[in-house]
Length: 169
Image (cartoon, rainbow, N blue to C red):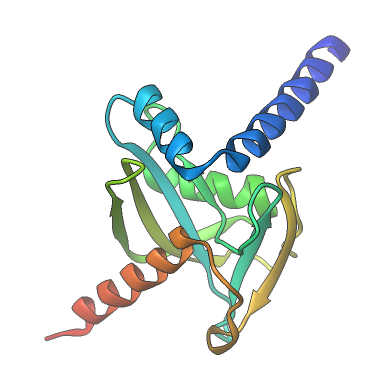
């Protein structure tokens, strides 16, 4: 049991180190790596967690300067909704309920498709960084958002557009 735990801890540290190295590579080299290692598009889930007062939960990853939403790649065979719930639990320790229809963001340059879900915390859980890759998290009013990652900005635009389409008669 102890060996398995230490192997898992070592694997997590190695994963974080590789992410940090990857993020420091020039953009053109990062794109080359993605294109060579993924034969087609990768699929991820983004979880936009909203409080009753409208504030949004943002996270800052150890390997990125700007703020983003909890999320990540779906595992092989995993439903994207399940991936969104899993990422929220893994990154911020929240059990979430997905609300409404998701939006989709296609980013052809790194060949990635993100399915964006609006979500609310199921209980009065307190969001806390639950992964070593999350260095900070905070709730922000929508009119006071910090500088966002490209993916987070695209996710907000997609959700706004999807909401507008859903509200049309």
